[in-house]
Length: 94
Image (cartoon, rainbow, N blue to C red; front, top):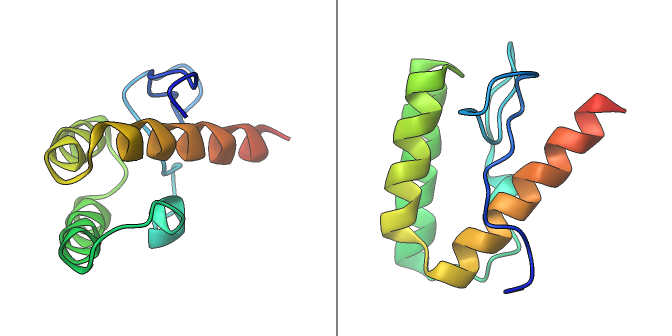
């Protein structure tokens, strides 16, 4: 996991501040389902997803989401989460 890139890749073409959502879509918990979260982490991440979805997939909401996620997830989980976002982004491009 440590070898994975630690950069957030955008889901919006040309916008480097979005992560796991795309315009017109909502984020879901699938992006972090494989991270072996504790019950407390899952509850917190679900709340962050709901807050982000309520705000819409905007530069500001995703920046806030990623900043908050860094306080919930450990370093390895954050790397894996960002990699899952990257994968989702790449699948959307195909």
